[in-house]
Length: 129
Image 1 (cartoon, rainbow, N blue to C red):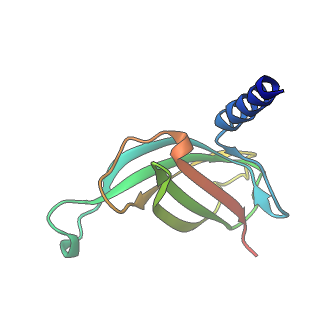
Image 2 (cartoon, one colour):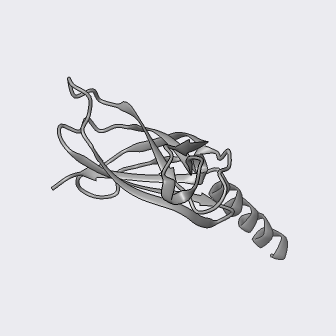
Image 3 (cartoon, rainbow, N blue to C red):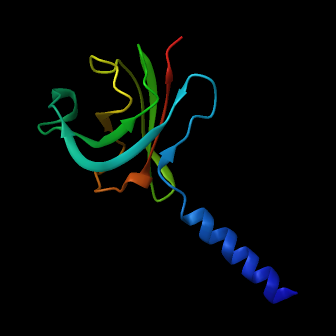
């Protein structure tokens, strides 16, 4: 019985670790999103913060669901299970209303930049009301 329980727990943990970085629509108006990369960058200089750019992570993601107007995305960046950045953006799809398209946004972070992986970011998009 103990060995069977151990196998079940291991299977559940393995399945949890294999989850995709694609966000499926969860409510009416939600759009499917897939984070494709998280890259260290610096946003333009701001004298208030010093002589170099502001640390940020460039979040590249695909938006699906054929949005036909303004949509809003909430972006969260995690490092070692700690939220290090978040932003809310508004955007419109490129002309022609494609079924999916690429977006890319820098998100200022608290602390140093890091070369993350797609699973370090969570992007939830929905049509604007």
